[in-house]
Image 1 (spheres, rainbow, N blue to C red):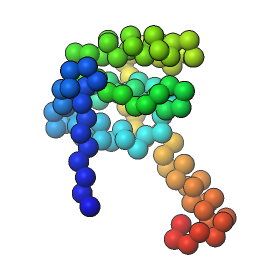
Image 2 (image 1 turned 30 degrees about the horizontal axis):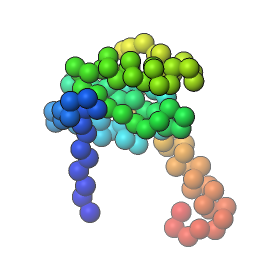
Image 3 (image 1 turned 180 degrees about the vertical axis):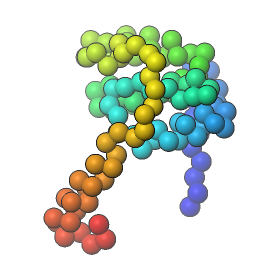
Image 4 (image 1 turned 30 degrees about the vertical axis):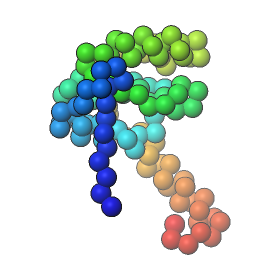
Amino acid sequence: MPIACIFRCEYCDARPDAETQTALERQLLDLRHGEYVDADPGHWLTWHGRGMYGRTRYSCGDHRGELKAELREQYGTLGWHPWAMGPHPWAGRRGTDRARKLARQVLNSFGVPGS
């Protein structure tokens, strides 16, 4: 069943252009934790929170500063992650392939069929 991901800026409800939408979709399977990642060409910023750093959040190019300020206020005392300085390039998925391989090994060790 086909699905469509809808990304919106946390502050103005703006939606990304088609190329930026594609960049944001590529980041969905990324297993980052507490990291900012840029999504170009629209200059969007993704916060991969997870765990103690909250949920994944998105901001358009006009509201990057607001997102960083809010995250630093909320999570700045928990670690260095919210204080990271840009640029924040996306260099491909991190951890995903290794995590899938580990999951397959665990499922196989329990004898789960189709893993």
